[in-house]
Length: 91
Image 1 (cartoon, rainbow, N blue to C red):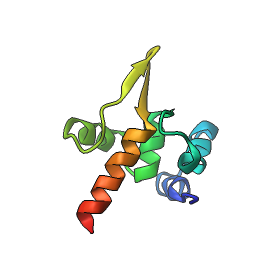
Image 2: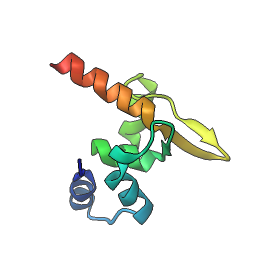
Image 3: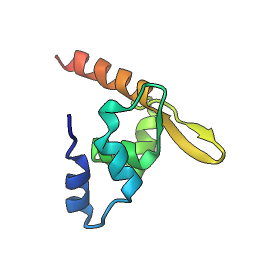
Image 4: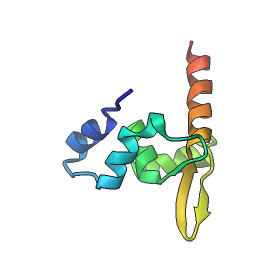
């Protein structure tokens, strides 16, 4: 499933996203559960800003990221599980 979050985020903010963020969004559904994405990708998928992203992490609404060599990363499998749980609760 192709995501249009990148398009809506670009239109909303008026700034273009880096190529690696756009590629991660476009390929999110094909990434393995063991893959990791940067906070900018999670923000773009949810169409939220970085401040809201970190508020949701602190509130437990998003999984805690890990640090690898000084880079903050979210696990794709954790994000998918959370989304599935949220969709099940909404249904």
